[in-house]
Picture: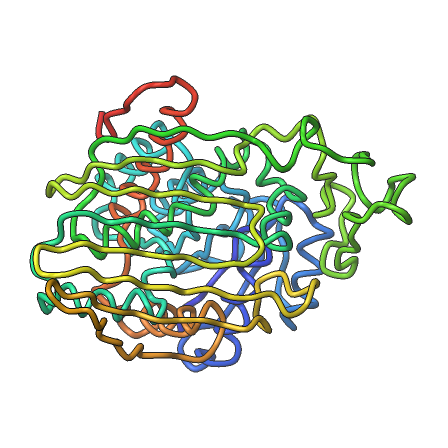
Length: 399
């Protein structure tokens, strides 16, 4: 039995905890939780059905419980700290994306990896496991469109999911470094995975348009649950008080706050090491959710759509949304595109989580898992896009 500790008791780690308890209880045992927010940690334990020791200090957890594997799901800015501390204690690590949020943290992680090359450590990028991504990978590997020349990737977040990032800590640059890291890093990992390369140069622009104090709005406050306008504001929400049983943080920050300092829309031109040129864009205030990917090769073009149309306004991750998934190949000289069957899966994130967990919690874990280096490449792309927006110039990713 692998002794597992969860560090950072957020929503994403609930999926990991439930998978371990329901599907991998014969090989893995959750033996402890750690979070600096004791109330939220207690709510997490109730939601996951866990009766295990709870700590607010990482060193105390390690000394008392001796974990063999830690799952890191803290606020993004602290991923690197706990990852490095775990590696130096020779404890295996699964770190939620993004691996970290800036270049300095990338260097710290690489140094820790060099000190501890034998310790298991991976990044839990799940987007490359989605059925559309896996089908695209097989098409490209099989030469379906020949040599890849360019790629276009457009990500849209609807006004339920998109707003959620601006109700939470994600909207503060110091904690997330923006959606370029928190949201887009696993898209950059997917692009690297599909192209078998990594970004070397980016040029980007972006802005805060739909949210924040400068966007058109009628009401504003600090938190929805304390706001004088909560009964009349159309953007007021109720959060899960049992899960977020906390005096430190609640996920109902005002989306019109002047403290929001990240972009809600951005676009980037990206040059890859293998010569492929790509464009990437994100819009966090769209009328539907999903992604459109176009890949141009010298023998044809692949167009993939993975969209979800909202069916319920309280469906944060679109689990009950109406899906649209398609992959088509457009051949030169043919007026009729080829429809490509998609290898679909069931479960959260289009079945991606089930496939990711199967590799993470295999004994031994699969060799094909996203590595720390994969995570760093994705972070460097996102961080470079932030730098390009802030500095108004082209950025060399690998500097």
